[in-house]
Length: 136
Ligand code: ZN
Image (tube, rainbow, N blue to C red; front, side):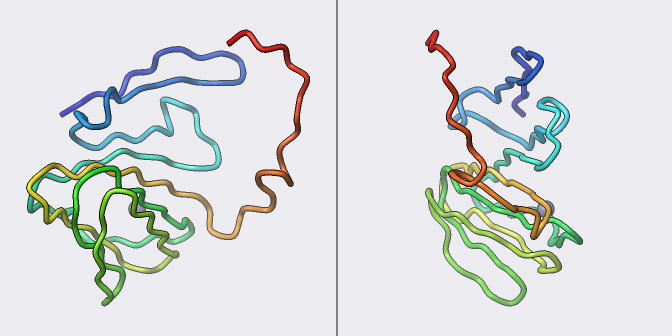
């Protein structure tokens, strides 16, 4: 089981790490470490042949699963489809879902929860280019 570590924070940011995602094992939620207010983000892993031990749905949040490693299957309601590294799956509220690792290696994924229907602006509609001097 890996551990998430908070590295540093400022008035307007928080920085944590799970270490190398390829070596990560377990389940870690980032909301508390990063003081998230609009999303919940978690890292999860499934061993070969393992699936999440329960189906679940959400009342108000949509979820996006991003598969980083491992091949497997994803089920939403009665529908099943293949997933692989690079797969991105959005699941609406009220839909039971689960995923299984069918590969010989560990499956690592990120799950992002956000209030369904809450995105009012993004990218160019929400971003403001600033004249901050770079210190990178
Ligand atoms: Zn969920």
